[in-house]
Length: 434
Image 1 (cartoon, rainbow, N blue to C red):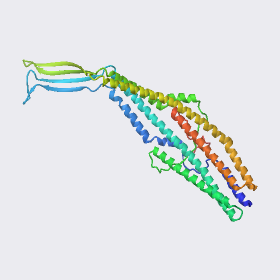
Image 2: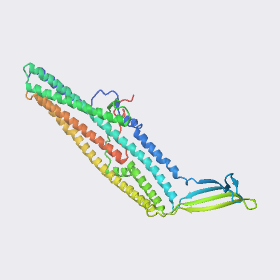
Image 3: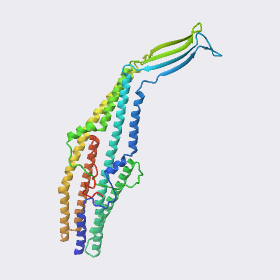
Image 4: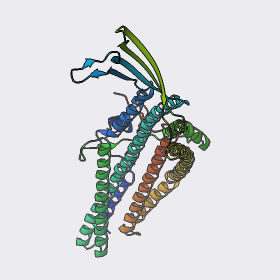
C-alpha cells in the first residue's frame, strides 16, 4: 500500500483516538441547577401547592363549634287580619347550639391538623418526585449529548476511510471487499447518529413537558454533572430516609389523621347534645306584659346504631389499619430502594473505575498497536477500523455506567430526602469566574 494512503489514515485515527471525552463546541449549556430552577414553575408543583393550601384551609371548618341556629317567631295571631290573641300571642327569640360529646370536637380538630400536615408533606413529595424526574432527564440528556460526540467522530472516521478505500481501489491498490465494508460502516454510523438524535429530541420533549413548554422548545447541551466522591454508608442513608423522606412524613400524618377519624367514628355512639335558649314576650290575662324564658336540651336517638354508627366505626378502624399498613410498607420500601440504589451505585462506580483505569487504556493501546502494524503493512485497515469501533463502544459503555451512577444518586436523593447532585461552578471546574 502506498505510504501516503497509510499516512493519511494513520493521522486520522491518531487525531480521533486522542480526542478528549466530551469535547464539543457547546456554546450555551444547560446546567442541572438551572433546570431545577426552571422546574419550580412546573404545573405539578402549583397543583400540589394548591392542594396543600386546601388542606390547611379545612382547619377552619372545625376550629370552632358548629354555627348556632337563630329563630324568630310570632305566635298565635288570628287570621285573617293577624289580630293578637291575648294572652296566647307571643314574640319569641330562640337560639340552638349543637355541642359534640365524647371528645368528638377534639378528634375533628386533630384530624384537620394532621390533614394539614399531610397536605404539606404531599407537596414535598411532589417536589421530590419532580426533582428526581428532572435529574433523570438531565443525566440521560448528558449521556446522549456525550454519546453523539463519539457517534459523530465514528461517522466522520468511517466516511474518511470510505473515501480512502475508494481512492485506493481506483489506483489499483485496494480491494472491492474493503470498499463494501467501509460503506457498511458508514451506514451503521449514520444510523447510530440518527437514532441518538431522535432519542435526544424525545428526551428534550419530556423535559419541556415537565416545564410546561412547547415540545420543540430548544434544550441546550447538558453541562457536566458533579457526582459525589464519597458514598455515604448504607446505614446512614437508611436512617436519613426514615427521618427525612417526604413520603414517610406524609404516611405518618395520614396514619395520625386516620387515627383521629377513627376516634370520631367511635364517638358516634354518643349523640350530640342540642342546647336551646328561648326568650318570649307576651301578656297575661289582665293584659300585663310578661317576658318568659325557656331552656331546652335535646339529642338524636341512635335507633339505627347497628347499621349506621357501627358501620362508621368499622370504616374508621379499617381506614386506620390501611394507613398504618401503608406506612409500614413505605418504610420497608424506603429501606429496600435505598439498598438497591446503594448496590447499583457501588457497582457502577467500581466498573466505571475499571473502565477508566484498564479497559479504555487497553483499547487505546490496541488501536495504537493496530495503527503501527497498519503502517508497517502487516495489518489490513479494516482491522484498524475494528479497533477504533471497539474504543468507541467502550467509551459509550463508560457513558452508560456514568449515567447509571447518576440515576442511582437521583434515587438515593428521592428515598433519603437528601440532595447530592449539582453542576460545578466555574471555580470548581478550574475556570476563571467572569
